Image 1 (cartoon, rainbow, N blue to C red):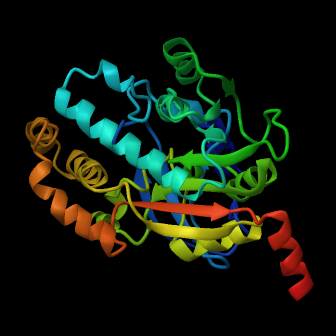
Image 2 (spheres, rainbow, N blue to C red; image 1 turned 180 degrees about the vertical axis):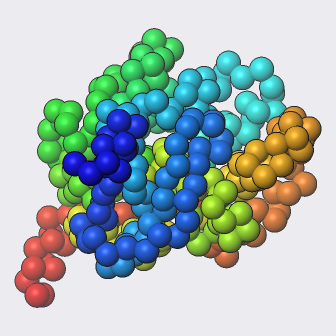
Length: 330
């Protein structure tokens, strides 16, 4: 092992080739740090010279990745009912219903069987269960899984989707909301999702939008990079290709859930990295309930033209008849 490799190993870092196609050819875009939570480390953002995936190398090892997820990490959120602010309860509830409706719009049957991968504290699972769905969750963080079970009584399996024991063709819908960018083997995760879906079932994903205005404005401070928790970023064509390679056909591909939150998180990142004193003064203002409302029309427009902060994609597993027709045509 070289001295550089030994130093990286001691720091819990590893170098990797492209997590999608395995190619070693790559171009370094820039180096970034953990600007949001300040955990020590410096990470290089690479772009694969073969498939175009954007990914970290070096990146944390599986054994070390947990130290980069502090208890204050924003996706680990309490129940909506426990929010002190009425405005925040309303906004979170509105977003939650919007997610449920987006999944149900494409589901082959509703209600049906849902697997929520990276279910966090179980808030989306509880919403789907209230609509009649039979729900199962997978969550790697023990504290979040325990909260989902204790607060909502939800069935959550603690572990990695690639390792937990779930029966093939058990689900009508699988959701990976803000999950794929955190995985070490995103292509394998999509293949596993396809195995777990019944014919005609869907996988629904949300993930940072590479084509967003946010990325163009904020550059390496864009929340979509969020080093080192986001191990990969997926340009639109790359993700569509990965889904097709997994045997899934894209049926919906648009911006739906981004807006103010992703923009403000990128702004917060930029402020903390470039203007710490200004950040301390401005962050209470941008977090004040109601500040976002005048900006909603602008962010709705960004979603409409495909430049919003979050991309929403639904892909379907062919049903038996469609798969047979496709094989016959070829």
